[in-house]
Image (cartoon, rainbow, N blue to C red; front, side, top):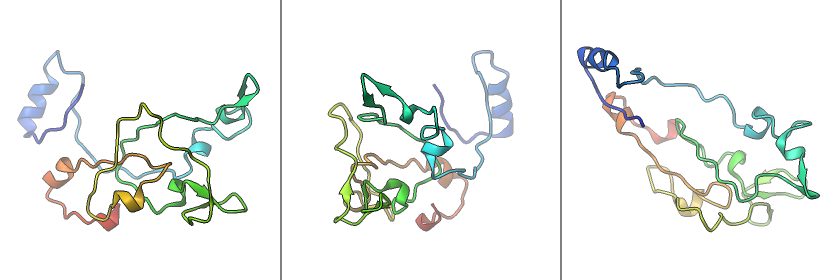
Length: 149
């Protein structure tokens, strides 16, 4: 279990010295490294998970939900399109072929409205859940601008 808190230097040192505390570290902004997750994880490479079969059926992550905690998403990115055009290129065009079915019946998440994020527009059969937790960011005093994420 973990939590985020705004602490003084003395409070952080006191927690770090507690034997019941595994670690204390300062939150820091990080640069996101990839929008091509399947390639980055080696899923689509030769010998990667997506090249494998079980009982003659290809395994491509059907009915798999992956949760990602990150610094924000750009829902308009082709990485989140649930359709492809005639050439197999991801698209948001309603005329494209839908390549993702609905979320598994066991999925309990959902999409939360936020500045610049409208679930009816931005969520689809690929981007099936989105929530934001910005208390830590706001505590820094930095100006929130949804277009930066």
